[in-house]
Image 1 (cartoon, rainbow, N blue to C red):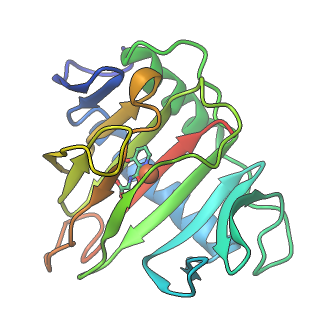
Image 2: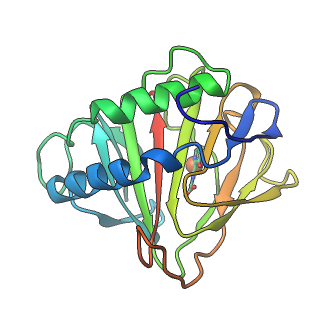
Length: 208
Ligand code: MD6
Ligand code: FE
């Protein structure tokens, strides 16, 4: 374990919440995020159905997740800058590796981190993270700033969901039997957080 004690909550077979596990490094993470955003700006992306997503996003790492009329996929170049995505800071990848290990997944080496920024009224509908080729690897997700309700279901869209509040510094790790679980995020309510102001950031580290 990298940091002080924190509570581990079981969400489902293969999925846990590490409560507050990223809180000690939140300021460092936010500094890195701001440098990434300077190089590859936050942008609104369109779903393949032609609707704008309510969260703004960018990426770092060898590849980045993109969405447009051609579908969801990973790309080596940022379509806005035409340049490679900013490299993943070493601190990001080692942090994700030790969080995954705390959750029982050894040897996690993410090659991408998707950075989502939620503002008042942003949400994310139920979805599966299925654009990665290597589904044996878990996903590590860090929440920073304002809280939201995270919904977590089964591998069928119609499976019942449970709801957990994710707060600043909370980490969700899911893999194994939960790797293709449907999940989503409720509306971000207006608020202000000492470190992120009116926003919530979510970092999802993956192996593509
Ligand atoms: C969010 N998270 O927390 C959205 N995906 O804003 C996700 O979509 C997510 O938390 C895969 C694994 C963990 C996650
Ligand atoms: Fe997801």
